[in-house]
Image (tube, rainbow over the protein chains, first blue to last red):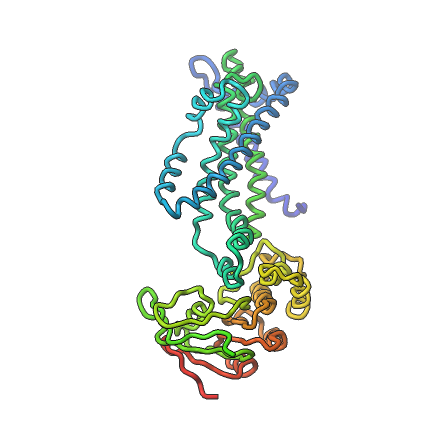
Length: 252
Length: 205
């Protein structure tokens, strides 16, 4: 960014940052039942040095569960969505059933996964995956059921086989919808991963830190963990937003 | 030899008939202009010939295979995620022709000078997209090219060059050209068919 472009945006941005820290500090002064809601910015930053040795490992554990769960959920969603698209043409009731499945909050799947897999790593990843699978499968079903495009007609004119037509169009025409649903799924994956760590007896992860801080009444640590969980979701979203922009440019 | 034909074809739209007893025969190597006012049914007739729209009545003799086609919605017909070269090569790739890329490269050099063949088709300007769609139609291995207003987005300065390229690259194939431009008709076609209210009328030579 050139100096000239940086100059007008720097002032308002610094002002906004200072304002946010000010609001944070003000909220941290609020006492509910004698305890602060949040730690102050200074206390949170101070806690960062204390927590640093273990925070990285916990962040990595949550990120790994999120990434693995998202990958499994996307893979399963692609298969389910493609199968549903084939079935929907013959039995439209499937579309309604998928909508119903999508309305089920991912977190309520947790007890089902715990019953099925026990309190282990597999259950945690399966829970994250189940949180993403419906979003992706619905997106795939919608994309695959879209009306025939002009490109598909061109392939018909060229007498392409159904498989050729599918390969030339489907993955690419679905890309826009898929990337948007991938962003939604990633946000869900972070939430479900942290909640799962909180309630499924995990020893590592941001969720486990949050619960430990809550039990010990460590407001500084709790504030830091909440912010780090938010930062994880933000970074994943940022990366996927870049991917979405690239796809949009490609489609333009 | 007839490469494609319609006989007394009727197509009904949502609220009115699009074609009524429309007939047309395209002979091998013949270059025919299809003209008529907006909404007369020109694009519908083309779609019936290509089997993209089913007629309510009449008979259609569809071209054997490998028809080159420039649709009116040329921009939406390209594959924006593939290169210009792959787009031009599409008809031959689909037909599993080994010469697909060589033929596409040669056509791109002649019809799309100044356009990098490795560029993504989605990044082209409107005129470049239409020229790419024309190159793709000419890369088709069949004996008929159907072009629905193929120069509508081409700058006047390039139009003459592309008309010339189309004439040269037809190489004995039949052409059905949908156009509003008298210059296109005079330059490229030897016979004119007019569509009036969905009916075909053979225009005098």
